[in-house]
Length: 178
Image (cartoon, rainbow, N blue to C red; front, side, top):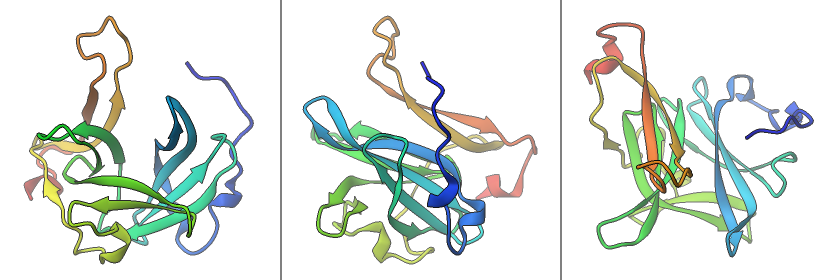
């Protein structure tokens, strides 16, 4: 359920490359018990090959909280998944083609959100082409995905994260032939 609120000011999207920031994805950064006390948002910028992290305690006022490079940052999703050892991890997905498993960390000293991969490195330490990506199995005309959690206790998927791909609309798109 959504409540109409005052528009988020565009003043947070200023500086080089911000003209194409898009595809916002929200995720919890800090919690006190079950209550989220800080939210994170990741935005993509295709022309600058940049992903920006923003942070907010009220989901209205946002500030820049770090960035990292990726060669084609589009349609980013962040989900929680339990690994085979029962450890909760976060997965960051790009255009439903690539993903990285790790953990979201809030650095109290710098005030930045970091995504730490399984090699214990922040994504900000990689270049746009050296991120340790895993490749997803996807359909030949898959373009991008939207991930979300099912919180309806009557659903057979209750408590699970679901990712749905969009149809590219371009059969046999060259990006699908990777």
